[in-house]
Length: 413
Image (cartoon, rainbow, N blue to C red):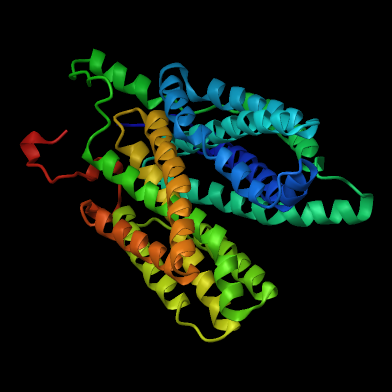
């Protein structure tokens, strides 16, 4: 399927515009993480309220990206992306002006819906641009997201100390960012929808795919891999602080260990955005490496080693989310929006179940045992990816070259 419908210049504009938007999503997400304790204190729900608000944010990814992804595949991704950026801004308005917990929860569900749908459909747009470079584009956009997540707390801390801004400042500046980005993306030309191209080819004589035919073994396997990686990411982020503090009794070390994880992830995504790579082989290696590094983390004897190893864990995590989404989009028979939405649903389930399981294990055993849960999940991800098969004829990779299970040539799609 030929998907490259834009000139090189137009393609570059799309990548830059979406990457800048994801940078602002990162600023928003990192900023909210910084002030979440202030918010729970304001509404008198204690430290356990942090877990409650974090869990609430995993509800919209369970169904909205998949549903709206199917809509985007039919009507086009541009109106969906822009529409849900506006919904993102409306959620920020509600949260920023919330006078009570119920209003804040409503705002959270609204802005998280806008954030999740717009990010995932925009990611599908990047995959639609070019089958060969889609993974690189997604890695670049996620590198920008990581930069934003790191910059958000720094910007908020500066504004708080310099201008005495409050907890809701992050929501108010986000409104400005997202209204501007919706206007910018309104002027950007998006690539033709692969679903439309598939229909055009069908009209020329090719057999039309059945509804939801894209949900085939490879998509299911990729969804399981997404469940693993987001479960790992959420579990690691929530428990590494407790693990390091228990191991070394140092809050400064735990903060640096978590920062090293995100820095390693950002560097990894940046590097993978500049190179063409075998997607399936990279997934196998990254999952296996993450399992090894997290196991190694439980054996380190000094804080410096823990910080270095945590950076390596983040580096191993780096390209996995991007690669899984790109593979799902390129193997979706034109349903890239729905395929990426399905990956978001899998990530939402992983983000809820894995940290919950780790909390149960940490309570019944130790926090070290909880980290070993992640080691096992990472190993499971590597085993799942072993069921995927790919090859790169003449040094190039496309989604159409990836089959699971292997079929004879006369029976291939």
